[in-house]
Every structure is written in C-alpha cells, then in structure tokens.
Length: 242
Image (cartoon, rainbow, N blue to C red; front, side, top):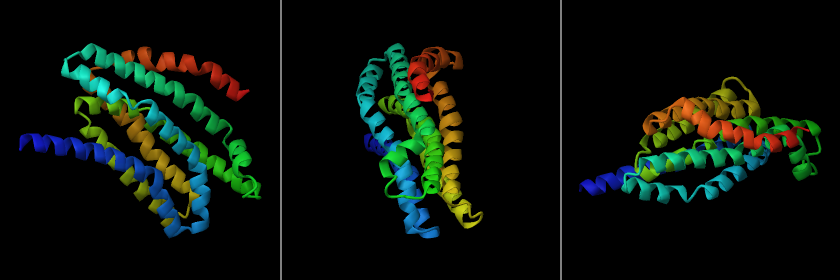
C-alpha cells in the first residue's frame, strides 16, 4: 500500500507538470475562440508555433537525463547528479538562447516568409511578430527549467515543479480571461497574460527552489551554467543581431 501511494504521488506530480505545460500552450486558443473570435485563433497559434517547435526539440534533447539521474541517485552519487544538472541546463541554454534571440529579433521576417501570402495586411504580421516575441521570452524562461525538472524527477522530488506548473497554467488562463473580458486587450493582452506568470514562477520561484533543493549557491549556478552558456551563445547571437 505504501508503494502504491508513492507511485501515485510520483505519477500525479508528473501529470501536473505535463498537463500544466499543455494548458499553458493551448488554453489561449480556447479563450480566444470564446471571447474574441475563431479567425484570431489561427493568428495566435501561428505566432506561437515557433515556440512550440523549440519546446519539442528541447524535450527530445533532454529525455535521457531522468534515467541517468535515477541511476546515480540510487548509488548516492550526489556530486555527479549536481554535475549532470549543471551540464544539462548549460547545454539547454545553448539551444534556448540563440533560438529565442532569433524568434525575438527576426520573428516578423520569419512569419512573413512563412505565412505572408495568407495574411496580406502587414499590420497583422507585425502584431503576430510582437506576440511571438512576448511568448518567446516567457516560454524560454520556462524551458530553461525543464532540465532541472528532469533532475528532480530522477530523484522523485518533483512535487513542487508539478504544483507550480499547474499554478502557472491557472494564472495564465485566469489572466487571459480578465485581459480580454474586462480590459479588452485582445491578442496582445493574452500574450502578456501568459508572459507574466511564466516570468514570475519559471524565472524566479523555480530556480530558487531548485538551487535550495540541490544545495547549489547562486554563485555556483552563475559560474557553472549561466556564464559559460552566455559566452557560448555570443557568436550566434552576434550573427543574428547583424
């Protein structure tokens, strides 16, 4: 019975994380369809497609972390678990940062080449580019924590990640409804309503929680993850900005 409870708790926490991520990505389409109109669903979905592709790529890239961490944790090899957490987040950032910079800096051009013939009005493409830039920053912060989630999954300590991701989804949906129904902010309001909860939780709360859980100082995180990742991304970011 105890084993069953542990298995259920483990599965529920993983389910909350996965379902929270799906709601964050797709609930906006439902809100748009109910409160704005079906025509705008395609605009928002197309704008968000680049971020969704980046998410799928990162998840495939980091899939092997969980079994590796589980094996090391079973042998009480704390130092190598920490090393894996540093390496996987660093390599994730090497993918996320250049991709995010491209979508932010060249999102309008990307959308124009992709669907410019479908939307003849340049203002529509411009609005979609702005939505893409807003969503990219928020989702990149969330994706930067995905490898940390997998490390904690491997150790069976991912309850907080599941709960906070579910909370993020709830805040995104609630804020989207308020922005459209009360303030009439349209698609941009929905984009900002997704952005702010992800910045708060994925950009602040989850990194602090993970570092406390893994006993990693802010200095260690900067020196082992963020600084080398930023240096490694400089050439590609410089090319994008030219």
